[in-house]
Every structure is written in C-alpha cells, then in structure tokens.
Image (cartoon, rainbow, N blue to C red; front, side, top):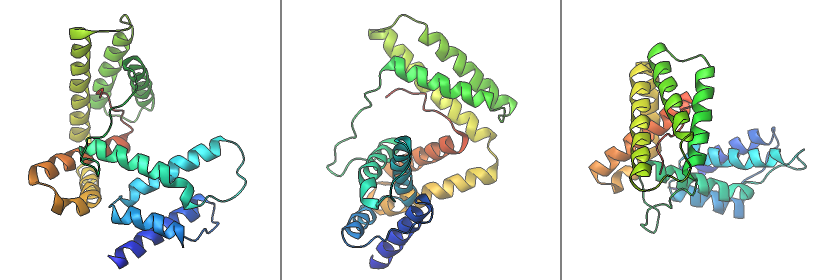
Length: 230
C-alpha cells in the first residue's frame, strides 16, 4: 500500500509539474496527506488529472497566471470529478447514498446537447453510418427544443424516455463503428480504472459499472455528449 501511494503521488507530482509549465511543486507535508487520501480512496489517476485540469481551466480563465498552482488548490475539483465519475458508473458514495441528481433544466440540457451534436457533425470525421445517427439525433432534439416550454406529465416523461433511447442508439453505433483495437484500448482502460473496486463489488454490479466505464471512455474518445436526461 505504501508503494502504491508513493507511486500515485509521484504521478500526480509529475502531472502538476507539466501543468505548471515545468515548475516543480513538491507534494510533501499536508499536500502529501491530501494526495495520499486520494490514493486510499481509490480515486483513479486519470480522474484526478481531470480534476486538476478543471482547476487550471478556471485559473487560466481569470487572466494571466501569477504563481504556480499547489495541489491543495485542486482538491475540491478532484473530488467533484470523482463524484461525477462514480455517478456515471452507478457507484455509491462513501456514505452509501446515491449521488445527487443534476440540477440542469431540461431546456438547458437540450440546448447543450444540440450544440455538441452540431459541432460533432461539423468535424467531418465520422463515417456515414455514424454521421446519419448524429444528424438524425440533432434534428430530433432541435425539434424538441422548439416545443412549448414547461413540458409536464406524460409529455415530459415521453421526451425523457426518447432521450434515453437516442443516447443508447448513439453509443451502440459508436461501438459498432469504432476499430477493434481502439475499443480494446478503451476496455483495458475501464478495467484499470475499476481494478481497486472489483473485489468489493458483486459480479453483476461490477459488470454494470464496467459497461458504464466503457461508455464514458467511448464518449471521451469520440467527443459524444450524454443525450439522456437524469
């Protein structure tokens, strides 16, 4: 465990150094305790990296940087990304309660997804079968946005069900069109992310989490939005 924690901390320190344009900020003392807790809680390295990226994106957005970033400043973002990762995989929080639901409104969700799908189409890198699915989904969601605001009851539930169906179709097409070698890389990465959870999860729960991890990594690889509304 000590070796794993030390290696985890070295990887984080190396990544932080790159983000700080080569300026080395040592992970020692309180900083080491923070990162050690991440390792003990089985936060995957790439999840931690995304949390660090999120902090740096916000930091850059405020204007010219004044000093190198310490890892301590990134902890809240790392934990936010970890919570999002667990939610995407259907894992429970430490207290055993399901993660909180998104507060994004349905109209805002539709607008964001349509923008992502439109950008994906404009990239011109999709094969014909995948491009057709993306195009149809974009047109269907754009039409849904034009409906009167404030859908209620059965109409709202029908739209949410349709979003889930479109999301599943998009992922199925992505799996079918992705080269086998690329898909195997994604599956191996999913296994690596979940390795430390495998012994504590029931086989069926682990299988569901693995499928969710593959889907999430597939979205990341291809730039696919989450169409379903949660």
